Length: 192
Length: 172
Image (cartoon, rainbow over all chains, first blue to last red; front, side):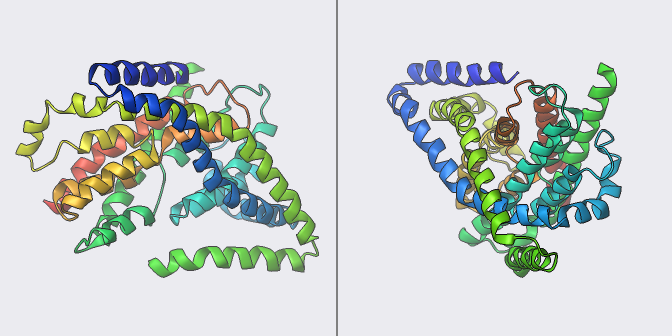
């Protein structure tokens, strides 16, 4: 699937760029994209390094296991394949909680740690597990209670009421997450 | 609301440090060990990021999306919407920066009209699905992602459709 999307994006981009006379900017893009990616990584690395450090402390002091125990009950039924008391559930819970507060970049390290510990439970190392997919469905549909970036953009453009979109955004994101989880559930049931 | 988002992080940091000290963990050693893991993870992600940015930027720079959505512009104008909403829906799961640029352009015209409210809601209804899948699966070296992409994109689409209804009910 990802192969096809990747190919389609490039093929359409180059061919349409040529037809519409945009080929010069495409030509530029071929090598500057590496630089763009590097800039994105440079933005992530400092956050990642600091948070991974803090999380190691949380892990070594058994804080994560504690959090896991508290939040695992409501999350349990979504992740039946994770053994009881396994630390990945605590990491998933932390990731979701921080995402909800609109601190996306601070949530990423928890998410990556969660993936790492889900990978420990994985028998086929190159294939995604059920738990990983469920986790990423929740993550990609982005349950955010305070969409900080959008609000700051609205303030920037002098909106009369920059916060007015919070309720509609919460409703839409909740609906998106539930749809994704239902899709995931049905897909798994059908394949079995 | 603003205060909550400013104060949460410092409190979490403070709590982790104090908790670690009470439990007599070598907090400094633990931090350094974790930071090292962070560097390794970043290193693993990099090639995946380059491949995605490469394809996405070639695609967006070609202006193909504008070409596709031009014909339906009159229909949208009838319901007080601008056609710039469709490139936003399309780009939202692919590129966080790309969709933010479109949202920014929409808000620049008038941040309080129906199109802006809808665009803000759609932007907030989901996260950058393809970026997250690339990042998270890439960090642990998973290549067969099964139905993760389909489920993620399905959620995005449903979020966008629902955003249409909710914005019409609440604001028009």
